[in-house]
Length: 142
Image 1: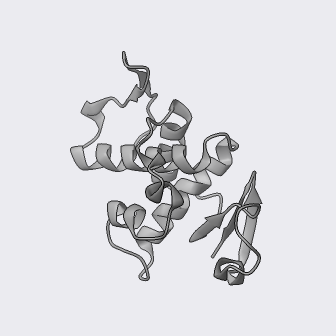
Image 2: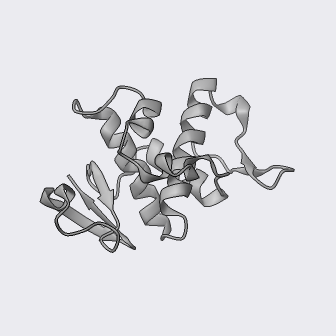
């Protein structure tokens, strides 16, 4: 995929130049942007790219489902699916972060998990994962 600017739509959301992407690519970009917006709005841009990269890293990993939709909607993986915020309209930054991750940028160097340490108790299993880095409010781990 090549980098293209996101164009503002009349509804106040953002649309991609549809003639540059297949329908499948458009659906993946939109889903990934929704995940980024729901999980990382308010985080630094690098943290938003990192959230998208985690979903894409899972897509490539044998322990996770084979489609982006299945990765995002896998039960008990992303709180934003359970609470419905995955359905919010993504902003421009979320689309840009999704596109950058889809183009191969991974600031996490392969992380498969992320969480907010202020919201996850120290007794949670996720703390057993090797931490790679922290960006903003999120810890990223393999």
